[in-house]
Image (cartoon, rainbow, N blue to C red; front, side):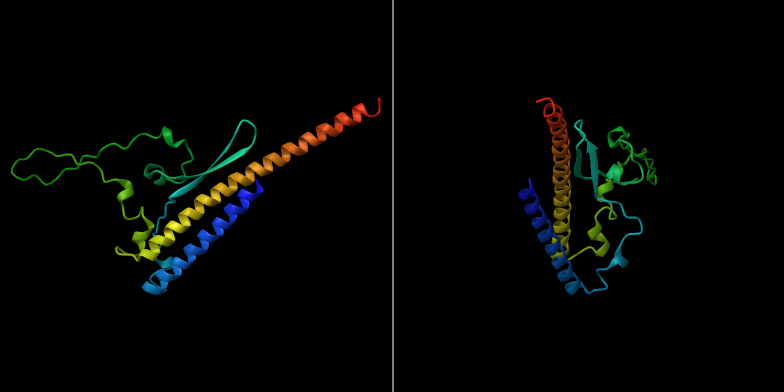
Length: 179
């Protein structure tokens, strides 16, 4: 398990370095003031979240999940996302022209809003290097989740081995004096 963990750590470092390099290219192309924390939205919503669950064996399991637009609207809500009610269409009254009947319009998709994609905070036409940086950091986040999963497995295996060694030692102590 140690060699896949080392490979994942190298891949994580490579992705993060690639992301920072792409971000520096973007800052060079757009200007340092055009790509800074001043462009962040006033209300940010995470695009990813880390789910932690414990298996019946007691081993924790980590998973990086892309959040649904419904879930992303309220980050403080920690209920089961499957228990939420589906979005219902909203009826809007349009100006009446020539006695036309009311028309219903479906709501705009929440993921289509400009606040949903962080790249739109930096303008409509962003450089390709900014998109590459976003992709690199997303990949790094996925790899970080995989690393956490591997480290959890290693730690669980280590505790299992220690518990078995203690049990073996107790069994040896009970059989050794009577021999």
